[in-house]
Image (cartoon, rainbow, N blue to C red; front, side, top):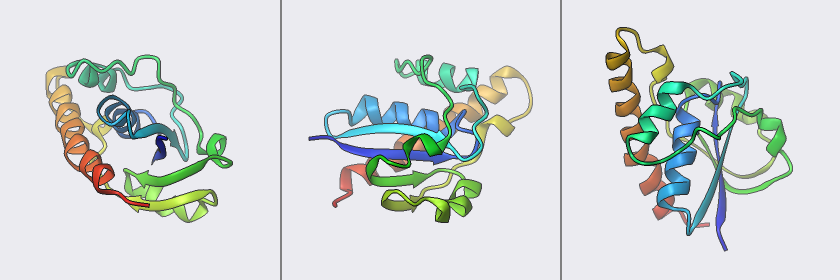
Length: 140
């Protein structure tokens, strides 16, 4: 039986979306990831979609959702990936251990599209390098 993880961010447009895509792609036999935001942006950032496509992972169908949709779900763990969501997490009243693994917000990247993509790629790789090992080691 797969364990469920909620990846929580503020805008739910970049980091949490990429993290959910990575978890579902690489750890889908053990984990099912969903993502949500405390103040969802209402869209998935196109550069997050592009950064994931570089790995052959399609998140173009993902949607930016409000965390309240998941209040009744039973999660093994809730991972916050931005500082503001971590501060808001005491509001999390659902099941699941809450853990913070923070990353820079790639949506704040400036410069050319190539420079912005480099930031999205770096953050994606940092998420892959920290969240996936954490979940592989996680024990209820």
